[in-house]
Image (cartoon, rainbow, N blue to C red):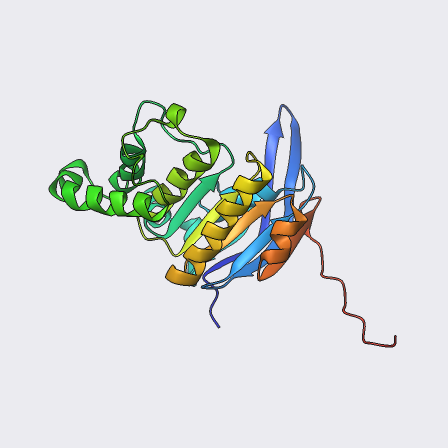
Length: 239
């Protein structure tokens, strides 16, 4: 089976004055269509850095990222941006919504990144209808004109998920999507993610500290000190 998204020998270091700080030290992972994978590790393990590299928000210092067998980490920035905007959705712990825009406008903003301004204006009505439907599916049909400050944390995260879905991505990279929510609201957001996965076939890579979230995933990838921790061998009964 061909991986949807693959990291091969990924290293990432940052400069701090004359020092080089290694964050990722050789990551090999594969993500397949339709699955939900949890990415777990202590603070500083490299989870968010790996997410940024996989999402083409940052380039690896060494190694390659493949999307559907295309070495996308080596593409020019404009081509990377096109893949990022059309194929990959992002959901963050702190939502990253534009405070001055309504919920509907924030979701439409995700579609504006796909085309030139004239192209977007030509299909603006269809985009608004799609955004309205997504928000209605999120249970926010009566919140279309509300700004982020008028929404609860759970409602803001639902808007962020709708914005990620507006381009119909194949995979959504979620960085601690429930980390800023109370336990009840977090459970609702997780139920929503699993429903989207089941109904629409969207893959998810979820960065989380929460072992209960990881337990729900199809697979768990653990990072420690910039490396993937090999899974523990399963012991046979009676051993």
